[in-house]
Amino acid sequence: MKAIGLMAGTSLDGIDAAAVDLKQSQRGVTVKLLAFRTYPYSGEVVRYILEASDPATGTVDKVARLNFYLGELFAEAAMAIAREARLSPGEIEFIGSHGQTIHHLPQAVKMGKHLVRATLQVGEPAIIAARTGIVTVADFRPADIAAGGSGAPLVPYVDFLLFRRARIARLMVNIGGIANATLLPAGVQDPDQVLASDMGPGNMIVNELTRRMTNFRESYDRDGKYAARGKINPRLLHESLQGDFFLQPPPKSTGRELFGAAYVDRMLERHPAKDKQDFLDLIATATALTADAIHGHFSRFYQPLEKVNEVIVSGGGAKNLTLMKMLAERFAPIRVAASDEYGLPALAKEAVAFAILAMETIKGRPGNLPGATGARERVILGKVVPAP
Figure 1 (cartoon, one colour):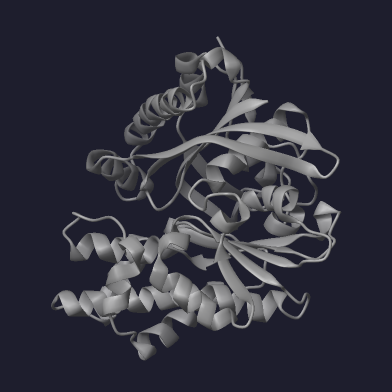
Figure 2 (spheres, rainbow, N blue to C red; figure 1 turned 30 degrees about the vertical axis):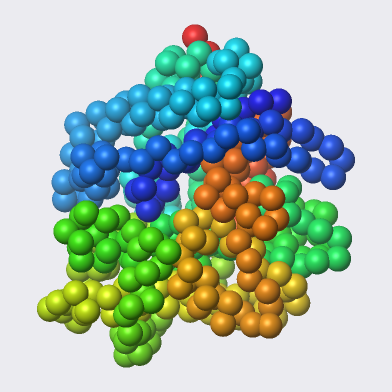
């Protein structure tokens, strides 16, 4: 079945769109990637998202309008990737859209007699379905929260479907704004045996520092070139790794609320950047923080459970050469490689994943993993909006 997956992450680089041909077999799912592209957000759109995401500026009217505005942009991305894949809307069975997260609150807070977790992704699926004429599945996280989970990460079930092997144990690491990983034991057949969790910041802190250093002319450290020119601050790195999140056992989930702009504000208060070299040193330190958070989580929580043969990295962080070098040094002698070497482009993985999760929803099959989110049980994810 032909489908489109749409993903917009906390890195705020844009909308990832993948057109895929999905086939199921007894072994799992095979994916043929027909087309992939990231449709960048304009500076204005990034500003809208950041304003809506900040409790100080995210007024109800801004959140409501952003939901429908991003629905229009997601629909445009879906139609554009369909044209690149040379598919007509009638050939596409469904769209799976993660939406854009503007707030994620995985820690339960007591309200009345209830303990409440919350998450909010915008990019109205009714708009996507109306503009494209294609059945749209969206809003994947709430069903997991309703089952007692944290709503994320959700890609680990797709890791299980695509990357499990009989004799090879793998650690699947995805580095977007946040870094998360899936532990796939050799020969695993039961999804309930899969463990996964957010691990800490991915590109988020590095991106924010890059924006500030370049006065928002650049939104990320392309190829890790800035980190390569900086010097790691051992004291700051050590201080940062003492954060409660890093010591908390999995499964756990986090986001911009912990590692976003306010985190960078505090970093700059303790270690002011007086010139460009100071910023380069902070970027190098933040890159090392990501590498250490990933490896520290692995060595503390996963290494005692399974002898891992391969570390496979996807997401924008796989294109950061400095970060990949740091990961290779920390995981040696375990091989670290981008998912491109295994047939799935690193930048396309999450968009592909939400096409697969949408397929599971339409087929009436669960898409979450309790070992990743802490949910009581596996549940069917998402809400299906029919084509008009």
